[in-house]
Image (cartoon, one colour):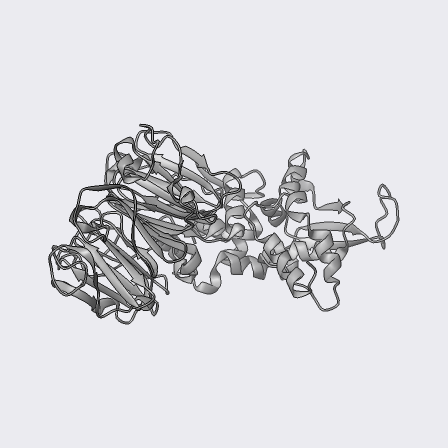
Length: 600
């Protein structure tokens, strides 16, 4: 498994400013340098080497070539609902029904601002038009140079460029600076970063409409030729649609049942033939698609089984390890970075996005156990032995490495650093798997497994999360004790017999998961000799046992004889007091107990 969350890119070298790759295209998924201190809600890219990262609930980070990262935050009473991008403009709609914009100074005509200054992505500005007109904005969409707004439930407005009639107002004209009413009874609006057209659905009648550029039949209306007036897409009902979007010459539609349809240019629509109506893509017929990301020509589709398919990619910009198939006209399966990604929930933990020159992949494993152990390995302050040879030595935690491999440290040392000693890079690759399931180099890890005579690839039952949960049951290897006072005997009395109860635990687990224990060990000179600590929190033995088990399992588990009210009360400050990872799920687990026993 990779890190607990990672952002990957592939595509143009223009975006190498957020990777370690210099002066090169990114032909495969390359991990970015974006810090994941908060869960990323969405990544949005415009046309050009820039993109916007939305972090919950209302924080934004803007990345641009040769510029320092810019941070923005909406007022505290505003919560972001969605963000979309056109050419060099980003529109943000909040839960309060307001719209905000972030724009390049050369693209301000795309945004309905009456008092716009000439700043370049300098600040987020409120779009006051809708508030002044007492319009509550439900959702927004953008094409290249045009903005679309669904207001007051079903009233559709549009602004910006109307070239090729893509505003849907029945004529092809130049520019509409202020939003103009298009029609009512609209339920959803769809567009795309590189598209010059628009799709929207209506409730009565239940229809899908399209307008704008239609040179290759990319509107799916059964013919080619631009459409300045919204035209019915006849073979698809509006209520059936999950999403629809366009590139420059093709459109892709996904239904709520997960079927994937396409139309437009034969080289980019995934069907390999010119299509003027939406046609089911044969290669995805047996798949259930759940996400869609389209650039100018490229398309990415993610299935409910975490399978990623792509086609239409430019030369040297393939995020895939398969050969080019007939100019990449048909969907090809794309390998995701990391080994265990197929076991994730794609609805919440995998996101795909596409800009004009780059594709994005965000993996959020929501596994702070993996992150905590990875940090423990990187700091190397609390290890109890070493593996390797001179110049290639790594401190490790003996219990963890032995439990994951089912080999002793001596056996590992002999097999990996005997006659055929592995190098530093291969050692690091192996240890990353031990501590976080991260696989930097699949081929090198297989070589290491072969040397250790271990089965490769590791089974789904041999993941870090499952191994640590099993380790909780292994009392023989526990090397530390938490002593919990169970009577009123004075704390400085050294005679603990009958007055303290012991909670056995693995020392490295405490160090990985709790800042409080790390600080305690860090302040002791002979920390390696410490094998017990007294607990002075005055919490019950039941609460502390539940907390320790959580360290291993990421879940709060109670028995029938335990008092839920006492547990919730005593552990309500555990995240702060024990200095747990800020992204851990402890509080959400505690909330489940509250809900189960009606303790709110």
